[in-house]
Image (cartoon, rainbow, N blue to C red):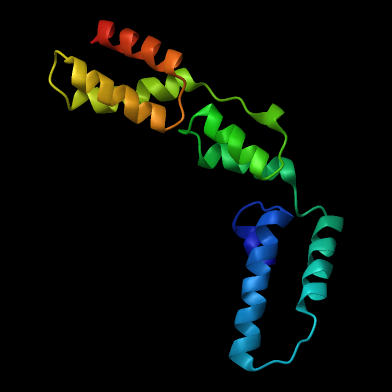
Length: 145
C-alpha cells in the first residue's frame, strides 16, 4: 500500500481492489492460510486514513493533471465516480478544443468541405465536448487559418 501511495496519490476506492489483488497473489504464491484478509485490508486502509496518506484533494489534483486534455464533462463524470469534490474542476474546454483542432486541421487540405467538417465535429462530440463550443472554436480556427 505504501508503494502505491509513493507512486501517486490514492484514495481508498482505488487502493482496496489493488490490495485485494495483491493479497490473493501472495496467498496463492506462498500457500498461505489466511482466513480473513478483508479485516487486514480494512486495518491497512484505516491506518493510512488516520495518518492522512489517503487524500481526496491530492487525488483530484492528480486526476486533473493526468487528464488535462479531456473535456469538462468527462472530468465531471470521473469525479462523480470517485465521489470527489467537483469544485476543484477548472478546465477550459476552449483551449483543449483549439489544440485538438489545430492538430487535426493541419493534416487536412486548406478548404474544408462539409463532410470533413462534420467528421471533425463528430469526433470531438465523441470526446465529450459541447456542440456549441465545438462550433465556435471551429469558426474561430478557420478564420485564423
